[in-house]
Image (cartoon, rainbow, N blue to C red; front, top):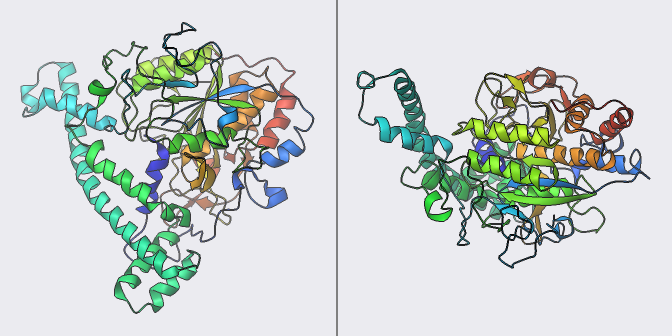
Length: 546
């Protein structure tokens, strides 16, 4: 699932019924500093990744080599004013001639490929969660049976999984309807409060004043709800985009847990149970809803010197769009094929801002990760927005390669989300974490970047933090092309700037921790420091991709 869409649900539901939450650790009632993810703590007083300083100092005068970054996501608006010049073009393919000119199996794949579309031009927009798909299969096998009815060790193991998933599914499906109703209520409260504010900015102070002084009871209650959300770390920009979250929660109620909804066979037409099937889909790399992927692409490489919109992290990239993430959970077969397509078509870095709690076919994804490792391609993945400990709770895909091998992929970076705040507010309240599973943090709250129709918006999520690091990786591979994927991973981790002192514990009230206790590096990625370390590393013996 596209992680940014989850932040709408996760962050908005942090609020409580009471309007009083003054002792909650992370109230940020100011707008995010402009371009903050590219700023520098010493120069600008903002803990970004020092992109601007890097180009003005350690990278000044150095030559770069164009690198390809694949964005495996919901789709990318390839005609966006701030992206059109950096979109990857398959020079070996003749556009729109209906022929597979380069012989790679994909017809007219000019800018990438779409694994959730059909040859008839139709596209999947929404899909089930993986839990729903697994439950559908298990229900068909075990519905109405007791444990005593099940014979054989393998069958009993599947039955136990059925019982576990059924319990979780029934609870989640019921909550989805309630969340949709609650999200609509929040949207109504935001609309009422916005009208009451007039030209005034939506801050805790301004909204609280309305809650205190309004004589209209409906307006008073609406303002109390909005003030509470702001106090609990939800930003004004997220509230401004509430309709997007209403739509997402509506899809949760209508598609995520709907056992009767399965668009795969009708639209894609592949043999879904055959994970070794590679050739299916179409060349529509934008798809019906490309906001998420377009935003990710802009963070990585939006044109830096055109005085338009915003600036991406990397200045010499080509963005390859590979569509395999619907509104719902992505399918393992598609993820594996997307990785392989990116590798085979020249990507040096792959960004993956998606994830899920269950996996249908871990092995096929593991094989694709190993394939990328063999071909020296770096994978950058968002840790997720459930405020969970990924060391304990499942989050797929991940870097663990096989039960027998029990080792991590040397070409995989797992990214948590940092905030621009200070005094304990340096982490995103929604971010997943893990001393073993999350490598480094990066800016992921209110990042202003590209969305379709040559527009821009501020979005939050580890989905936004991951492309910041993918951008850093692209810069390293661009200016230091002899570095291996393993070396780039090592450099980004070792150069991360330590976050000292106590910080808010994601997902908790009043509880603090240190970043060193909930991530491998205890630091925030930084381009200047990464370049400095790359300079020291470039002449040394290569770190092999094991």
